[in-house]
Length: 314
Image 1 (cartoon, rainbow, N blue to C red):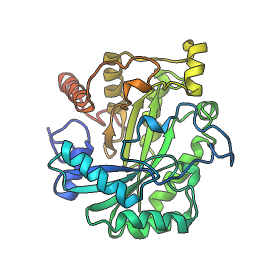
Image 2: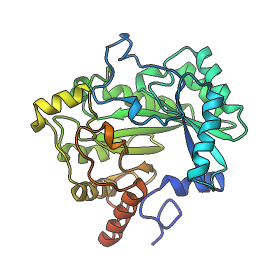
Image 3: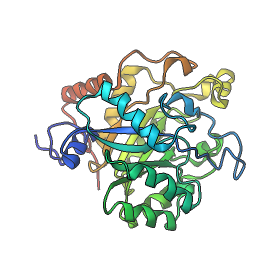
C-alpha cells in the first residue's frame, strides 16, 4: 500500500522523515541552557507543573555549569558511542521553557549552538505562553538557513486539567501559539500526555479530531509516568481513583485507535515517554526500550491492517 508520507511504514515516523530531509541519520542532543518557567519562579505560579522533575529526562552531560558548546561536544561523544552512524545533530533545548527570556538572551544562547559545525538546526522546547511575534520573527530568520522546530508542551486539551496541574495557561493559548508559529513559517511540535487526573479514554480519543485541525508539524505522545516527590505523586497516593492507568497492551490498542483518527500529515516522534525507573513512583510496564515499543505497535497495526489517518476526516 502507498502511504501519504512516501515510505512503507504505517505511521509518519520521524526517523524516516529526518532521513528524507537530511539524507542520513540525525541525532538530537539535549541542552540545558539554564532557563526556568513562569509557573516556577512566581511570575504566574510557583512550584512548576505538578508532574515535572526535569532531572528525570536530563542526560548526565546536561549541566548548566557547562557552556552550551561544551554540552554539545559531550553530547556528541555520548551519542557517538551509542549511535555510531550519526554524523549530524540537532541541538534540543529541552529543559524548562527555552523562550522564557529576553530576545537578547535567546540570541546569545542559540547562537552558541548554531555556530557549531555539527549542528544542523535547533529544537526549542517551551510553553505556549512564552512565545511572541518578536521571538518567532527571530526563529523564522534562523529557519531560512537551519532546521528549526518550536516544541510546545500542550499536554492536555482540557482547561480544568491544565489548571489542576499548575500549567498556568489554557488550551486556547496553545492554539494561538501554534497558529502564530505557523504564520511565521516555522515548524511546531507538541507534547500530549495521556493519563492526567480526572481524564479518561473517551475524552482522549476526542483529542485526535481537535489536534488534527491545528497547524502541527510533529507530535509526541506520553503515557503518564508518576514521578516520586512531585505534587502529582502526593495526589496519586491520596486519590489513585482519579487516575486512569493503562496496562501495556491496552495502551498499544489505544494509541493505534488514536493514530487512525489523527491527521496523516503529523510526524509522530514518540509513542511513550521514557524515565529511569528510579524516578518512578510505580514500576514501569516492562523493560522494553522505545524502539521495541515502536515495533510492537507496528506489528499490531499490520495485524489490524490499519495506519495513521485511516479514519481521519479533513
